[in-house]
Length: 121
Length: 109
Image (cartoon, rainbow over all chains, first blue to last red; front, top):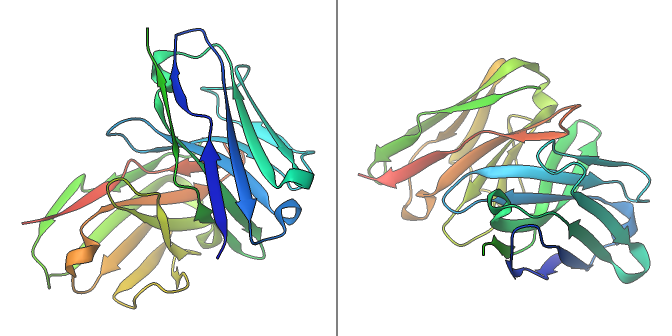
C-alpha cells in the first residue's frame, strides 16, 4: 500500500521558519508529481504548492509565494516544504498528496496523514 | 482564476436518503479536470470521483458524479452511516494549478 508520512510540524513564533518532510514508500517516487495542501482549523482545503517528478517545475499559491519553498530528494523518496516568514494565518494541518495528471485524469490519489503547524507567540 | 462554489454548505439528511451536492465553477472546465473527495474528522481527504463521473478504486456504487461545463453534481443514492462527512470538489487549472471548493457537510438529521 502506498504510504506518505509527514513530519516536522510544531509550534513556531510569527516570523519564524519550519521545514516539513514527507517520506513516500511503495511506489517509484521520482515518477510522480507531488503537492502540499493545507487545512486551517475548521476550514476547507487549500492547495499550497506543486513539484514535478524531476523537481524542474514548481508552482505556488499566491498566499505563500516568496515565503515557502518546495523541493524533493528522489534518492531519499522525500518531499519537503521550507516555510519562512510564517504568519498566524499559516496555522493549519499540512498534507502531502500524490498527483495523477494527464491522460484525462487529474486528481490526488494518495494523501499523507497530515502535520500540524501552529504559528503563535 | 477559476472559483469553485459548492452548495449547500450543510445538508441535513437521514440514513437511507439521497444526497445531492453541487459544485459550480466560475468558468467552463473540462470534465477531466473535476474530482470529488470525502473527508471525515481527523482524517485526510479520500478520492471518490475523478473525471467528473469515474469512481475511484474501492468507492461504493452509491456514489456517482455527473455534470459538465460549469455545473457538477455528486450524488449519494442512499446514505449509509459512514457517508456523513465533508465533501470537496477540486479542479485542475493553469494558475493556480489546483483549486478546491469550500466544502459541503453532510450531517445526520
